[in-house]
Amino acid sequence: MLDRRVLSKAYFTHDKMVRHQIDSFNEFLDHGLQKVVDEQRIIETNIEDVYIELGEIKVGNPIVREADGATDRLYPTDARLRNITYAAPIYLEMIIVKDGEESEPRDARIGMLPIMLHSKACNLCGMSEKDMISLGEDPHDPGGYFIINGTERVITTLEDLAPNKIMVEFETRYGEQIEVAKVFSHRRGYRALTVVERNKNSILEVSFPSISGRINFVTIVRALGVETDEDIVGMVSSDPEIVKFMLENLEEAEVWTRDEALEKLGNRIAAGQIKEYQIKRANYVLDRYLLPHLGNEERYRLLKAQFLGRMAEACFELAIGRRGEVDKDHYANKRLKLAGNLMEDLFRVSFNRLTRDIKYQLERANMRNRDLSVATVVRSDVLTERLNHSLATGNWVGGRTGVSQLLDRTNFIATLSHLRRVISPLSRSQPHFEARDLHPTQWGRICPSETPEGPNCGLVKNFAQMVEISTGIDDETEVKDMLFERLGVTPLAPFLVGDREVPVSYATELEAQDDELVYEVEEV
Image 1 (tube, rainbow, N blue to C red):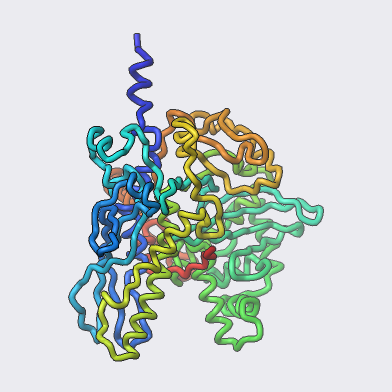
Image 2: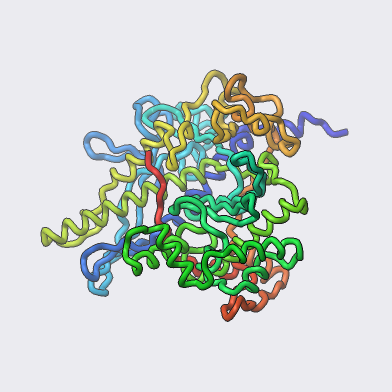
């Protein structure tokens, strides 16, 4: 007979209870930091033939700089008692390239990164219970939180809708019910909502960021390079009922060629400007803001047209009863943003601010005819202050508030509960009855009883006791490796849309995504 006490003792240890927080932060240290640096790759300047190449990023162990200039290892108890931040230095390899000649690589200290207790960069990592007690630490403390200016802060897990996934639903507008397909396109910290809707006249319209109002579906698709009626219909569906709807859309088309479509878009985006600028701006908006997760270069436009075709098909299938509305509260349609993911978003915006400052300092030094040196152009306070401010106040990038909270130390159970909390981004002042309800798919994932009373009821939840949280996978490497190498799948040859080749799967095309995305994240 199985002794349940043995099982519970083996599982409910302080290592397991907040393991999701620590594993997520370790993933950020191992891969997230370098990923953000690789997205930037080089820092351009306005100085002719001068730029900075960025290399490997490293994180040290938490240290403290004393008044006499000496540095010493910092332990959590000291940080609490002295009201200082438990943080470690970040070093980034930088090479100044001038007239094609590379200077010697230098590791510059670009700032201080707050370190999560018991993560791999923490000074307590791997320490015995006896040593921890000698340093004034509780060996049963689970970790998983930060110390900012002497106060313990925890990054709460955020629950959000799954990105890059088509969601269909009915919406009521001006007394009419319309079918809508939405996708939250997510790439490198930038999130763009693209909507395809079928209005009361059965005409499809598209809306996406940086362009006001709604654009005719056929106009967008033709601007993306799919021009003939046959190609447009074939891209959406071959079903006779859906083809009938598409023919109605083609009869109401505003444009018939790609050039006309780009002109019409340009006139909406940059009204009053010269024609050449309007077309240039229309191309830029299509590449950058329409479904950015598929890529932001011209060669990805046909893939974007295909994806819009899938969204249009979903709208029509909802209209004729072939599919139902997507249940937003189903846990398969949710994703959890853990501490590591949120720190990556914060570091990305902070690092962009640092690179702008480095560019300014480099140009300033050049104007004064000084030697261009990495040591003199990096101001580490720029990054450090931005990271510390968000962790100290809870005001995160993208306008989120309350992401970082003061750790509840009422008792040990309250601390564990706080470290395992999940917060929904929905407004507390709205009813959101369905979102607050207990959903069957939360079984084994979310605790059915631990939730506050009052306005936060059902929006602030806690993990179930034995939940295990998986991490996301890299589509470009892991999925392709599994399909092509382990399972022996052979990539199909491209097929033609008109006279253009379109890959069967955009996954094989993602290798070449190397262009920087313009971030429009509002900083608080």
